[in-house]
Length: 60
Image (tube, rainbow, N blue to C red; front, side, top):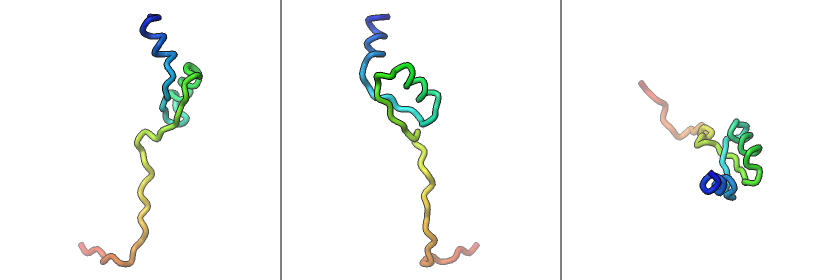
């Protein structure tokens, strides 16, 4: 265990977690020596489209 697990736990690497998640809290407590970054998990806010008057009105 000490030859495999400890070096991985002590390795300085960036941890990524969703803001406010259990994973983020766990990483801060258990791996305080590792830098942590917040990520969005691939979610993006919806694209805001401006109302354009150049378009033709839809007809069904």
